[in-house]
Image 1 (tube, rainbow, N blue to C red):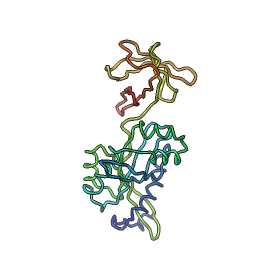
Image 2: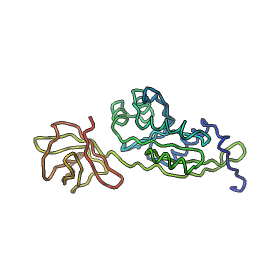
Image 3: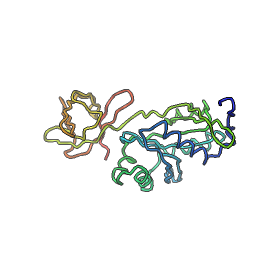
Image 4: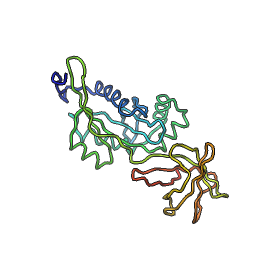
Length: 249
């Protein structure tokens, strides 16, 4: 019964326990993602930091590095320096190995994910604080809270505030055929027969997309085609629906 529940004091919540609860809740909320402990050493300005959790989209369009915090910790001195490091720092082989072992991806694909798939940073706290939301948003860090309501010796219900919504997604890697002015890539649920407006270094251009078997073929309608032959390119979808083309390597 809800009437029997009492709100857990933030200072009473141990971070290890809250982290375990957070993993369980995130797995329920984001069933199309892998959610697992993620504690590689991330280096930023000659200092090493360790996050808590990773959330990896199963279609490999995006992923999150998540810091779990209790609200009694200092936002400015403790939380913000960490998440800036996760946003701007260097991810090494240990990060790749953890992703591979936790998702079942081959090492090469895990490396592609860590190094080239849009990475988002988020903080999950055990109580919602609008100041945390404001400060973290100014650093392009997403914020979610999971407030635990407890009965005696167990947690009975949770209140989740905020949602993890990736602003960018990877919708495929293609290979350039410069002689035919074509980019080919593996067909997935995003691509359809038709026309796309794609932003690249020379501005926005119209591209025709043709699907055949397991391939999508993109042909630029007009303008120069300045992509090196056999170069790998990446297509990024923004949350406003715009599509851009990048050379990731």
